[in-house]
Image (cartoon, rainbow over all chains, first blue to last red; front, side, top):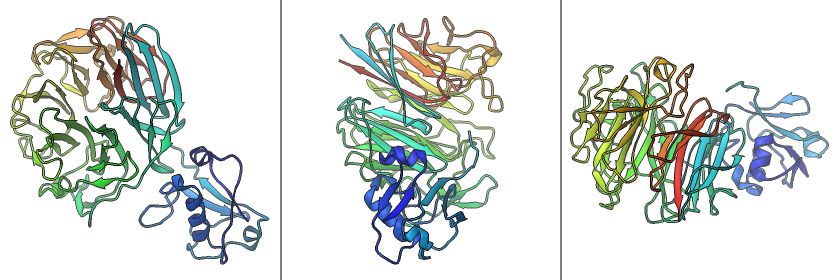
Length: 99
Length: 371
């Protein structure tokens, strides 16, 4: 199972606490994980990726295994530790300041 | 015995305030959607327990929330706002073409007759409609594809469609206002539109009497006389007696005619309210005094309403969607400030008291009168 950690606002929206676990068929890519996440929690559609372009929203970042994967292509396989469930895939609200 | 429900949108969440007809003691719930900007929430006239809320953030974008129990519980519904066809361009601040880009929903206007039908005014300016309770949204593209649209420019707050008025006497007639394009009217349920800005004068644009380009801040009507419209423009308070075909200035003796909200008394179609703001470069009330101005003559002659409002060291603003009236007798008037206060008057505006003083900056105030 793939472990996904959502930022607090999206956990509230999805009505989950703690990590989300998802079954994702290989190859486990960033895009496949986000597809599975949105299928399981449709209210998250449009909050992480644009509805139409599927591009990451500007102030959302993706981290895993101590690396920033935000600018990886959606079809890039995620690290083995994420695929194996040893490490979570982190969806992060960027430290962007704001009011 | 009636009761009143006040729906307040703030920069950091929504609040629902309820009272009996005396409007003296209030129960306050919230924040709902804590931490998110709530530009607007409004109830359906056809089913007062059906509420819609616009929830957004710079991080996670736009959401629409729906309640079926008067705001006790909420569920997210559709948030996919996609312009019809190839969106094209409008003008940017520097006069260069800029692609139409969806930013947020500024205003939600439920149908007068169908709880599942609701209109959304968005930035960049366009009008969307849902007929399935907010699950799916479709653009009424005749507005955005009006021949003048490629010349529309944003106001300082963005190019937002912030006002939607539905004519209760003529199904299919509706009015919208866009900063800074102006006011528009449709007589065919939003399929086609015409600018209705004749009589407006805006010195801030190259042609002060242009057909479009005016920064209309708000329009209001009384449902018994939908042909009479009142407008708070960037500068100037205006009035139309012919459904927007022509406008005349009714700023009269206001201390400043800049401002954002305007509203009409529930039972007196010639009684209107504004909150003068010092200027477009100083978005706070003049002289440190928070004053609502009331005209009982449909404009021109105004009186300051100050009883219960701070009259020194006050430097708040009142935004365009942050004033509303109830339909109790006497009429209640409500407004929220950028300082987080929500003030209520249960006597036509003669006196005021805060419902609450320390909310996040208030963006919108709506009122439901429940029987």
